[in-house]
Length: 371
Image (tube, rainbow, N blue to C red; front, top):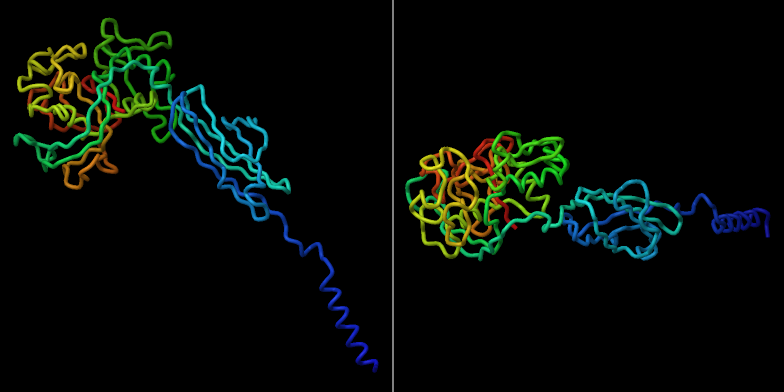
């Protein structure tokens, strides 16, 4: 074989063996796993078993089954569980708060990734004593069916609602004082409304003395007043309830599926069913002292205006869906319903709509809860 041919053979063999040799720099590098999880539910109370599912974690090299996870329930820097392959776990909180949960996932190479989520834990619903009325779902004509209202009470339209419950009475000073003591603040502590004032101290309402909230003497069972929308919303949320929607409120005020078509909640004689400017001395009165309506709910006409969950729209009900409407997606004012002790009878009508800024407070503003 000529030297030239021999050189070519050696070159080819050299290339072959060099290509087959293992270069450490060519090996794929291990990358950290990606942590991911979700909580079910995201809002509960101190009786809720929250489930956390990390089966959505991933890794470039390892299958999900090979990944290990551990949990820190309070995100306080200390791990509450050891690394384990099980990706679905449950945890129950003993204290009401908004908790940040931390997950760490580890692959077979020892690399880790982390993720956090928040869950809201309210006090167990039984922690506050409210009397509840079960409202059977049904349909009704919502709006100014009497023809003597305002443009924002129109158009009259049919609404269908699922069954729900509503508190028999307006929330009282005693109940709200209990809430403030358990909550530990008169401002919203966390979440999207953090820092908003919930109530203002005045006589004939809820007072603070020696860092303890109490109802004003003799007014335990009067409706709480000077409450902002945020204060009403947070009370309901804290105990696992919610504010009624405007449609739910009107349905109940009309007597639900047992409605007799009254103009005011419970009758056509305002003196029998409502505290208003003609009979109240323009003061609040003990809840439940006027006649109940057809579903045995009290004071839905008069005594205090009641905050509802919805934003208010001057355009009325033009764009409302026919089933379980929630009101507009945004706005400047929140809905108030029912009239008060300082206003005349035309504002006691079951279809009458009021509104104000959610930050606003007044000695005629209160609320009730739904669930």
